[in-house]
Length: 187
Picture 1 (cartoon, rainbow, N blue to C red):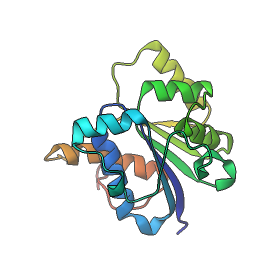
Picture 2 (picture 1 turned 135 degrees about the vertical axis):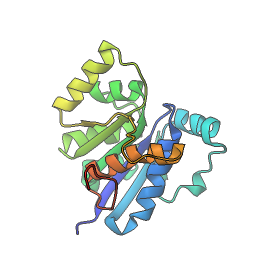
Picture 3 (picture 1 turned 120 degrees about the horizontal axis):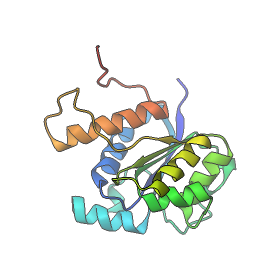
Picture 4 (picture 1 turned 60 degrees about the vertical axis):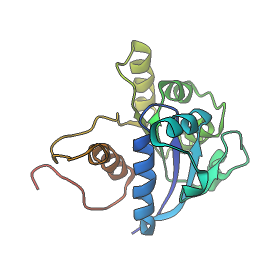
């Protein structure tokens, strides 16, 4: 099995639990990971602290790059990443990616993933969607991005908030190319 080179972006949308569970699950799937880099927006750190408690970068199991570090590997196509997941993804970040504005490392990395024709998965958490949001998602979909809204499923009868959020994380990781047992309808 080919091991993935992955970038995980976490923005300031409410739903830090999705980002935390994603990082935890990628750590569990480490045998399928060649490299994983993480970028938190400044707002992501603040929302994480508000929703989950203290944000401690030392607890993140992968290298964390500062949003202003344009010399970090994710800023260049030569780094050879296979996939980038932004989870949760604010509509502001989604809009900047859609318009090609690379104002920080996270949006630059997404721009690089798109120009290199690699897999970009955005997990917007906000709702409802405005026409601007929908048009940005349409534009990104046409450019090859996978838009996977944080819409949990109930088929697996999740028993708590983490299990419910995990239905989204599992789906995202399946889309990214990871292989692991997860709930499948009818099986």
